[in-house]
Image 1: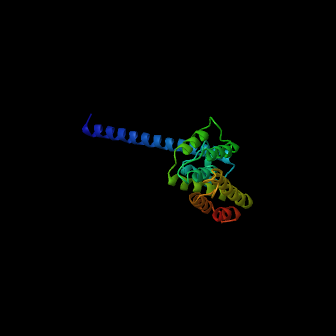
Image 2: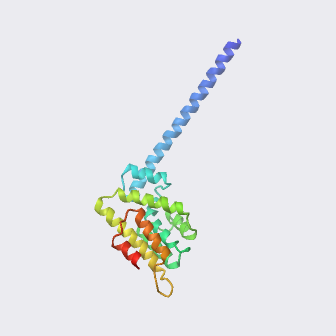
Image 3: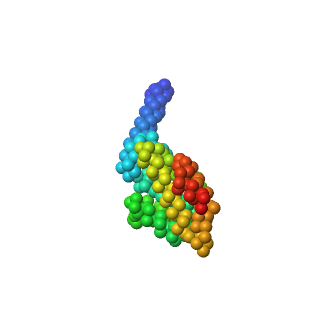
Length: 201
């Protein structure tokens, strides 16, 4: 076999190897796309939102079908940590709210909630989560959107009040008031009654 033939054969081998590698990459990307689509379908079922843009945004923030139900609970966790620690009363109320949303013992979401209540998540996590909550609210009909925002602020207020303050005075601390105001602002709640009451207390 001449040097030319050897070179041609080697070139064909490299070419075949290249195309095989490209084909494998394309198959892997296709599988990943299908998996993400299935994940979005499951998330849509879990939270009752069909908007693909919203679901993709939630995926990009790291949420999936097992944890997306936690979104409405995360702001409560944020308020509970506002003073540097979560009280037993705050923890109990958060578990009650979570249970009403189907987050119960033995689920991935419940285990994740336990982690957040045991160790404070970073501030960036709370910020990203509030952005995700806002995506969710924006996808709702206008009347539901306003009600959902107000309801979330009211739950945050209850978390702040439940720990009772010092000797029952000033139930909501400055740190908690600031946290609630920040949450209200991030989710587009424009200071209606619930927020005014918190700031005035």
